[in-house]
Length: 363
Image 1: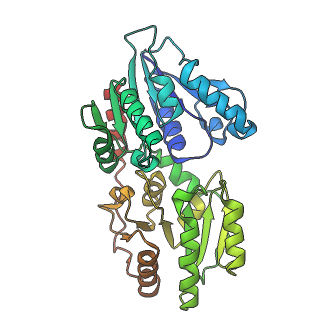
Image 2: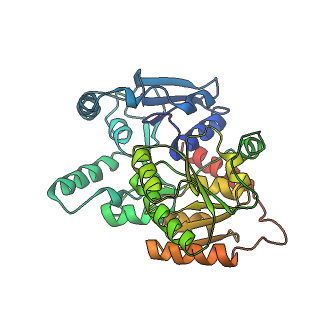
Image 3: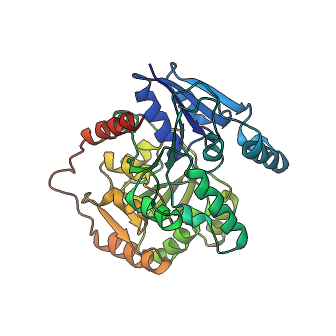
């Protein structure tokens, strides 16, 4: 049986982390799987199949280390730490530190190295000399991999614009355990929705990329125009205090709610009227796929994640500006332009089986 090593920063709640857990829980039926994390802990650790071995380089969660310790760890990852040996394939499942670590030469020259890319890497570079140096370093880094996997065509194209296309590449969509999502969506949960309101839900980490501050501003304008709805954001992150302060200052406390992290967000998605993801940029959004599985009306900005809804009738893509979102939401909420189909969108579970076969092929 082949021995496969998957690497990721941690198993905290996140899109790539959830995809990894669902994927390895299926692959462990055919392979000997080890998940390697830089930092131990994480809410998703408990969801791993008992047959999967877990190795952590550092025995505490990321948030328990100081800024100085994080700097020292980054240097060690770059210069002294090495990936575990003795595997047929090692897969860096997230951009950044784990990709740099897994690119290092192995004692076993036959080990196959695969890098997974979930986001538009060009978003992390400016035009400064420091970023030019980093860009060249990363280009050489990815050349050390036997295969690079992108979760969408758009992300692949952006990568090729930055680094060229002389890599062994493929596109594989995010794998999800759809049966688990449907089952969890039916679990009991205390949901604060009022059936007399239009209830909008989003699941997002509270970071700049997700543009929650912009969403708050747009929502206030809609309320001032007499277009009423309530927004519920599931997720946490470094901007929570700042965003809550913005909500308080704008008088949106009765209409815009930060619910924090939920280990099971699916009942909230299932029971909402609309699912929104209004990010500045996004990869192939896993949470959009989850909303599709739950047959929700979906509103997103014009980002690479639009590939998720290309063949999904109950969706709309809005211009990725504050004014574009305002105009789009105003039309959606006042005219109800996303109509229910006479028959629901047919969920094709075979797509996820095909994704699993693609992964097995490259392994």
